[in-house]
Structures are given as C-alpha cells and as structure tokens.
Image (cartoon, rainbow, N blue to C red):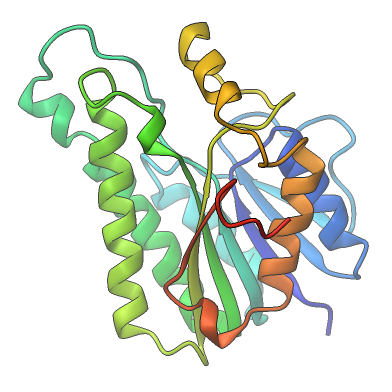
Length: 230
C-alpha cells in the first residue's frame, strides 16, 4: 500500500515542492487548505480538502473519508492563524482568541494519531527571536501554546507510534510571507545566512525528516540556520 501523508496548509512554493517530492516516491498526499487549491495541483496522488484550523468540525468531517482508514506515514503542519502587528495593548479577547486554533490543531492530531504507525508529526514554526515581543504578542501566544502542545504529545506518545519534532525556520528567499512589514522581512533576510536558499531546499529537508523518522528526533526542535543540517 502506498504511504500517505497529510499536509495541513502551505499553498505556497514550499508546499508545492513538498507535494511533488513526496508524490514522486509513490506516496499519496492529502493537503488541507482554507483557500482555493492552486491550478494543476490536483491528481490521483495529490488530493485536497477544505479545512480551517479556526473552525475544524466541518473540515474534519470532509477529511475522514480521504484517510479511508489507511495508515498515515506522516503529518506536516504549516497552517497558523493570521498574525498581525499590534499597535495598541491587546485586549483579553485578542490574547486568548488563538485558543480556537490550538483546539483545531489538537483535533487534527487526535484524528491522525490512531492512523500513525512508526510515522512522524512535523510542526513548522517561525523563528520568534526575530519578532519583537511588543509588536507580535499574538504570535508568541499562539506559537508558544503550539510548542507546549507538541511537548505534551512528546511526553505521552511513544516514538514507535509517532515521532514528534519541530522545525524552526527564519526566512525563505522567494517565499510568500504575508502580513509582515517590509522592515521585518529585511531583518529576517539579513539573519538567514546559512539557512535555506530557496523553498525547494526546505521542502527536500522536510521530506527527508518525515519519510525517514529517527528515534532520536522525537521531541527535538531543529533550528535553521544554526543546526547546519543542510
């Protein structure tokens, strides 16, 4: 039976390369999106379904038949809520609103875990050290909660069932990076030396991590460019 991978989000260049790299190995790719899939990105091996992590109930209902009870080889999480720079003190609601997205991610993981057997769960995170705390408290609240969730799964799930790992990326030249001001993008680019030169190189690294999970990776955070794994 062909291996099957679930990619949550990433309709951009990295996701495009990742889908085709995994599909070239004979795998079936199930990709979720809250937008319209890219033209030419649907085939017998690349399948799309609508899912919004802020409101997952309908998306999970549509996703279940695509899983079709088959074992999953890996789950790759790109999706995150829109992050904007706050120009005023955040209200209580703004600080806690991302809990819906965290609940959505947990529901996705809980749906997938019974289907994983010696597979991997890879979470893609931005490098928060490049985001000033005063301007991106939303990002720190959400991604901090997501990191804590992954750490909890790491403690309670055996790596024989699923290897949980995190990939922290600063910036990808040529990648679409919405909702960030040019001044921040420039700073991120300046500090990406030694990182990924293009989206395809990141996609190949992601594919290598999820296709060949290693026991030592369970619970690890891989940081670029400092890890030097390229």
